[in-house]
Length: 60
Ligand SMILES: [Zn+2]
Image 1 (cartoon, rainbow, N blue to C red):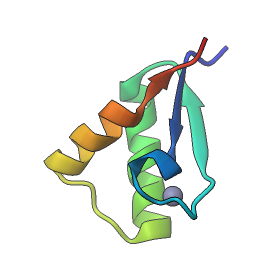
Image 2: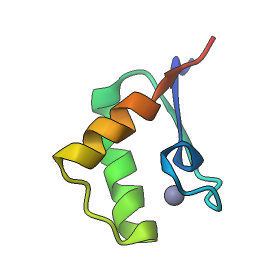
Image 3: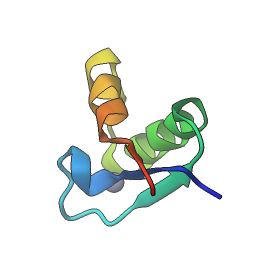
Image 4: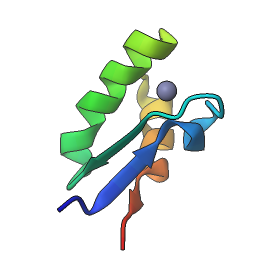
């Protein structure tokens, strides 16, 4: 059971419907970085990673 969720739309890509479920930031971050790079051609730097962390929400 996933306890956390990330939606790409929550970091500004409102046209992107990609979402990811996971149990920890450590588990999810590499997959988010992979998505950002492959789909948005974006290399996540420190600042962006902070933004991504803030967008990872707990699922009830
Ligand atoms: Zn995306």
